[in-house]
Image (cartoon, rainbow, N blue to C red):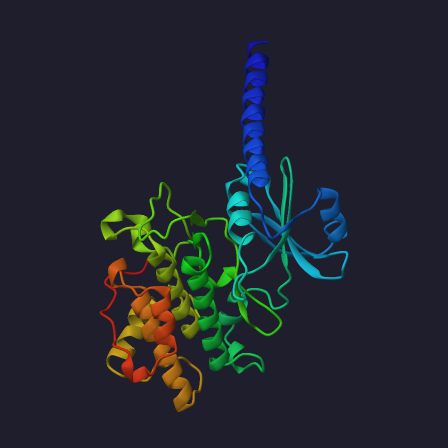
Length: 340
């Protein structure tokens, strides 16, 4: 009997806690106006044809292909109940629901009915960037090449610049990585997945953080320890730099399955190549113009991953460097952190 009473008490506390969180989310949705439309869960089931075609699966839940009543294709992200605190849902709706930029994914709508939460995005037919850059033959395909890769890098930078300084609310993404860059039918990039984002009505140079955010391999050093510096928009710049280097290398920055130990941490290996003006050795043939383009991307990436945030460029400066002449770019100091 005692065990039964305790069990009922715990269930009641959990129900009350969950109800309070749902009330908070509902109040948030009522207090804010968004560009996205609200749908019922019944409508979500209808647009996905009862969740017939799954596009992907992750810690957040599952993504399904859907069709709106006007015939437009959408990607429907169903958030798992493990994300039931509502923070990821609020971050996503608050971030993408009030933005409009060619390099930021559009939130078409959302659904919130208790534990049933869904986010409805424009459909990206070419999926995420990661499936292309880690494929050894991607640069030889008819759609992608070094010039297109450079355009993708510039597009991502423009999207980040908009989030940092171009919209009414400053948005720090905190999870920039190839998996979260989606490609439309023309392979134009769009930043997605704002579940870890931090919003600020003021243009702050520094941001207070209680928890570390991001994905290992892309997280800026200051998110591990404040002894490296303050968390700011420069934290996104670091992640961007790591991603640029992966785009160039066509591999993860930390790769233990390489032939030589010196190649395990790609940023250090490629730094030596650029520093001493050696052949890049990227296992693909390049014209002189492409070599110059790639060297420029590497230099920008190395500037972005400087350990001290003060030594990193802003994303606007990084964008200027990508569009500048190679001769005008200085080679940065070697990042002194070892592999994550």
